[in-house]
Amino acid sequence: MRFGVVTFPGSCDDADARAACSLVGDAVALWHGDRDLQGVDAVVIPGGFSYGDHLRVGAIARFSPVMAEIETFAHRGGPVLGICNGFQVLCEAGLLPGALLPNTSLRFAMRQTVIEVQNTLSHWTRACAGGDLLSIPAKHTTGRYYASQPVLDVMEERGQVALRYVSDPIPNGSLAGIAGVSNEAGNVLGLMPHPEHAVDALTGSADGLRLFESVAHVLAAAA
Amino acid sequence: MRARVLIRPKAGILDPQGQTVERALPALGFTGVSRVHVGRLVELDIEDPGRLPEMCEQLLSNPLIEDYEIVGGPEGAGPDDSRG
Image 1 (cartoon, rainbow over the protein chains, first blue to last red):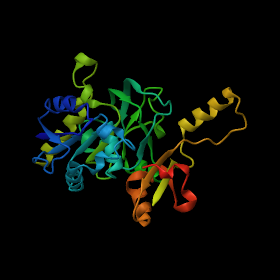
Image 2 (cartoon, rainbow over the protein chains, first blue to last red; image 1 turned 60 degrees about the vertical axis):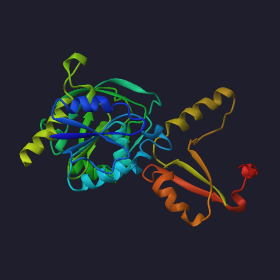
Image 3 (cartoon, chains in turn purple, cyan; image 1 turned 120 degrees about the horizontal axis):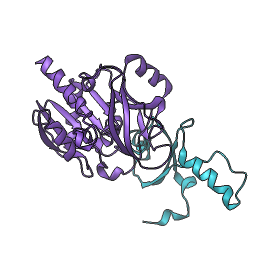
Image 4 (tube, chains in turn blue, orange; image 1 turned 30 degrees about the vertical axis):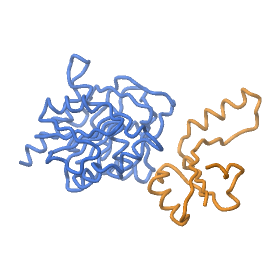
């Protein structure tokens, strides 16, 4: 399978994301100005500071040409993973519910977190089991997940809360300890921790690979 | 016309910046201050102010987490409005 990894001006985790993807399939670089996804099977929007985080995190990246293509791809059921800034971009684009607010501490939080897989409804958690614990680093200033209570209730009911922090204290003050959420169809997932930094035991954990493997399973099963 | 858009965190959403400012003021002797919130100000020249609300909803604010208030016209014009 072929992963496309987006690079916006200000992305900084795109190289690691491509390296992680290449452990599972092929990785293709997609530029923010592209109007063509080059026929990739899945898209990864990596971490960083797209467009300098101007106005609000993710607010400007949402309007880049490549995002219009990704929105179409996602609406057709194509798998999309947003990591950290990529999660913020997906929320701003309306591909995921809710928004990310500044950490309660107002500080940059950088630490290894343990997140619990809530369910395998998302394409990106399919190769896991509900209750699996993944050790994945988080590093962000704007990671406090927020959705209004009625929206959150519906998300919980539908199983859209895919990942929750179980390490204490959580890095950002997210509602209900939310680390990652999916859309209703499950093909789009966003999370604040960085699975692409946890793909080799050499750096402490290879648990992040499970997300990339999950989408490969889903695509293989559909082929 | 010159317009100003005030953007603030929605009521009920935790505003740690506001809380931090509120805690800092008494240290300087400013007591009796409460309900502090920190937001953003966007100033712009606009030919058709009728388009400001959709502009606010689509880009300048995120309606899920922020409220906006448009300040414009003579009552909104401050002393700085002669700036380029």
